[in-house]
Amino acid sequence: MKKIIILELNNYHTECIYAQVLYLTKSGFRVEVICSQKTLKHLEYLKGFCPVKSYDFSEVLSFFKLWWYLLQQKKSHIVLNTAQGNRVLKLLTLPTFRKVKFYGIIHNLKKLEASSGQKLISRKINQYLVIADYLKESPAAVEKGIKSINTSIFPNADSFLDIPKHQNIWITIPGNIELKRRDYHWIIDVCSKNKLPNNIKFILLGNASKGDGKEIIDRIKNEHIENQFIWFDKFVNQNVFNDYIKKSDYLLPLLHENRSEYLIYKTSGTFSLSEAFSKPMILHSNFRNLNKYYCIEFYSNIPEFIHIISKQPVIKCKPFDFEKNRIQYLEALKLI
Image 1 (cartoon, rainbow, N blue to C red):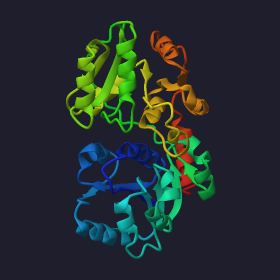
Image 2 (cartoon, rainbow, N blue to C red):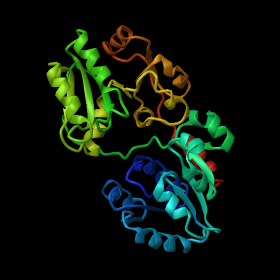
Image 3 (cartoon, one colour):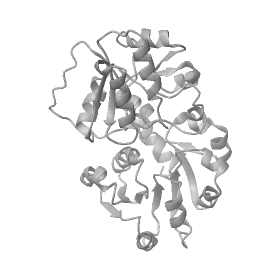
Image 4 (cartoon, rainbow, N blue to C red):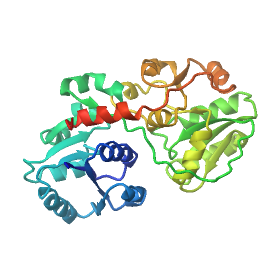
């Protein structure tokens, strides 16, 4: 059996690994996951599927240890789960990986246009991949012949938590609170300047004690709109996360209407969650081009937004097609 190594040198994008492991193991391939020591705790569950090896990539010596290990894997495919950044550049500038084929997931296509380091990385990449079908149609992807894969599968973590929902409508904003990613002040303005039904609850599904959490929670309290929000002051484990997503009525990426880079260069993790759990998203009409790919309700102004969230979803989302996406992944890696 051919061996495939999935390699994540950074401390993020680990949510993209599970689907790849499933696609490969269910197709009869041997798989090994290599990650940083910091992310190992998030990937321990994969040991039920394949070996998981970790290195401390904050130490330069670890790159040489990994380099030497990879040199022994003469006919392996190596998938760089994040094919960008200084750590990847350090590894790929070491000689020589002639008998190893590198496939790399690029999470921001802008890097291909603007980064000199990315140009050096590109010399070693046999095939770039993106994790959203619409991104392969962007000019940068077409020029480079980039293939798309779908990693919208998340670990099952069945729990026995009894989360009371009653007649509430849950609109969930997944992820730790980061203002550079999501427009939290916009949703606070919507709640503070408009009279919303009491049964509408916005779920901040991430650790609000990190990042910009304090600033946003303080503002929610100052505006006296705590009754419209649910948040968490600690790490949200997988079973709690899954339960809230499953019970949600809508997912809210909370992208500012002018964030056009999400149409051309990168995708949002909420898009993947929408696919994985068959939950509709709510987006500004500036993102209407995504309607071909995802299950979305669109609004053009705040009254339209309030109208959408004031009722249960009417739109029906398609279930995730595992077999179709397994074949697409294997084809992208030239394994079939």
